[in-house]
Image (cartoon, rainbow, N blue to C red; front, side, top):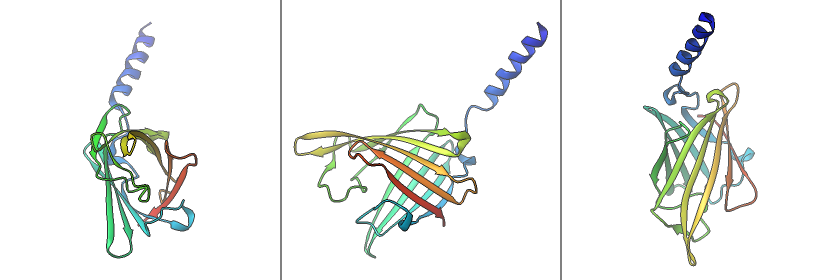
Length: 175
């Protein structure tokens, strides 16, 4: 009986000591450059750089998109990857679909919830926002997975959007 009680207490202490994968310890942190030849089309952009930084228990994902020398844009997402917290990130326009003539509607923000899979090797994001269309606001859901290779030098981003049938794949290498 004492041994069973000891085992239960030990398991409980281990569970409390490791509540999740810490953002600052994530191997995803760093600068990444898109490999256009191995990625889905990302027109009209010519290049996309991704920087993942830790800020306390949150991650800040900054995509820097360029289209010729004078056209540049940034997309910044701050997320607390604990599977419960929804962070609200301001959104001026949706840089992923430049040609659709839809504007950001609703509260002009993207609502992001994140979490870890595979012991911190995969970051998953659930992103929700509204597009303003002629017929009114239209809810959009984007699911992204940032999958790190075993050698930590390749980052594959899989993206599913409620606005399209086919998934997108973006392959980044460490910059």
